[in-house]
Length: 222
Image 1 (cartoon, rainbow, N blue to C red):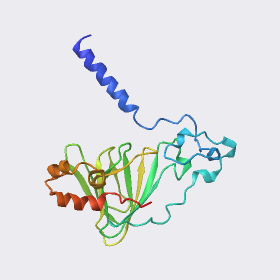
Image 2: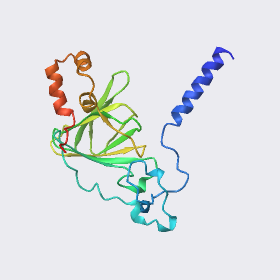
Image 3: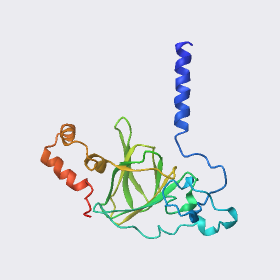
């Protein structure tokens, strides 16, 4: 086989591999999980048997849990993620969503979703919103009520309320289990060796310790 054909087959293989990396296409109209089997709810409800279609009701496709903001964190952020784990009607449809509220000056720290592209719609407020591409370029601007912005899959993105009133954002994902990693917590709250972090960020052991105490999960006493 010629080198050119070898390269071609490799590229085709990689393309197919990437195409198969997203949520699978549904093979039926819907699949409301049959929770009578006593299974524990997880984001992968597609592993459960479906309800009989005759038992499915309109309420299976309605969710009322984002009418009000969630609980606010120290960063002024309240987030309500909605996946099939709380809204079984989403099961096998390849999507999920979230309501995000930001107090004045509140932030949604840099994070990324390894399995989904996200599109955000500003319901109200003024939000500095953006992402960083693989060349470390920042694409960010202030978006206002009625505007939308898209964050490509796997890229770090962020938001900050720069207005004078609370902001509300609706985010939608093209995966029922997008996953999320917050950058500060992933670095300082994951148990990476202190010496490596000191060399990577030019911080002292004391400064690393301060960061760990802020982001490392507190141990619960038994």
